[in-house]
Amino acid sequence: MTERAQVRHTPNTEELLSIAEMVWASYLDPAGDHPLVVDADTWPGVAATDVVATVAISGAWDGRVLLSFTPLAAKRAAAALLGLEDAQDMGDADVADAVGELANIIGGSVKSLMSQPTVLSLPAVHTGPFPDMGGEVCRVSGTWRGEAVCVAVHEVAAYVGVSRTGETSQ
Amino acid sequence: MILARIARQLGFDVVEAGNGREALDRLAELDSVPELALIDWNMPEMNGLEFVAAVRRDARYKAMTLMMVTTESEQSQIVRALAAGAHEYVIKPFTPDAIVEKLALLGLVKNGVKV
Image 1 (cartoon, rainbow over the protein chains, first blue to last red):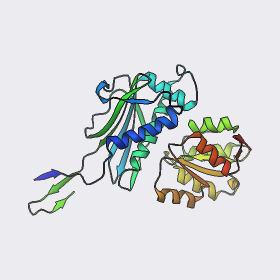
Image 2: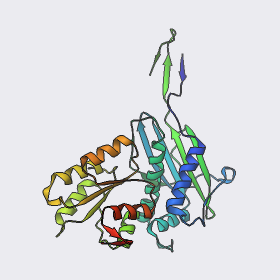
Image 3: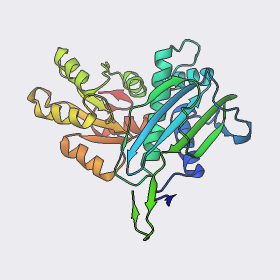
Image 4: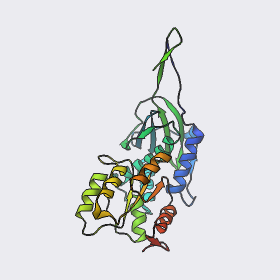
């Protein structure tokens, strides 16, 4: 007989929202004119054209932090990080750098909530849906300047084996 | 990209590198020793901590100010970086003002402009 046991702290939606709001206030909306509008009900899911950045956290806690923007939101994020008004001229490389850096920052803040020691991976950026990894533990989704945005945390499951004598093993 | 923008706005000439190994190579190519290095921790090939240690071992770069700018927020990591030779440590997310303030404390910026 085996059962799945949660032995480590996992972030909750409130913590993730606090982190996302801090990142928006620091980099994407310092003037407070265009905040992240959280509305889980209207989020359409990650589209095939969305820009997605993923960082992995591994060690005492194993999981992924994922960030998705529509292409326009990703360009606007890149422009904001570069201090530019016009998002239209943002190239793919700048957009990937920007979204990757934002995932790095959000991932680092999530990592600081976890049991230690943990290690943060470099960000990986791709276009299209979140990888199918299951285990979503929390999500903040909504819109930024009218464009769909999502931040999610997925946990890699830890399984604890329970013997007939009640002794556990991992 | 954010740090490069802030540094340029302050009046610094900026040379960027994608990892510590590349940064050491770029340093060796320069005609003069930079005043300042802004260093992330998590980088491929050679991470920020290793870069700080490498720079500190090299007498040519004795005058460089080294500032870690990173998501690593654990006390133990901060201690490791400072022990390795970093002069300052900034945790992401940061505001541009926080960077400017730190650089002012280090004597590299005054009234929002590079000294």
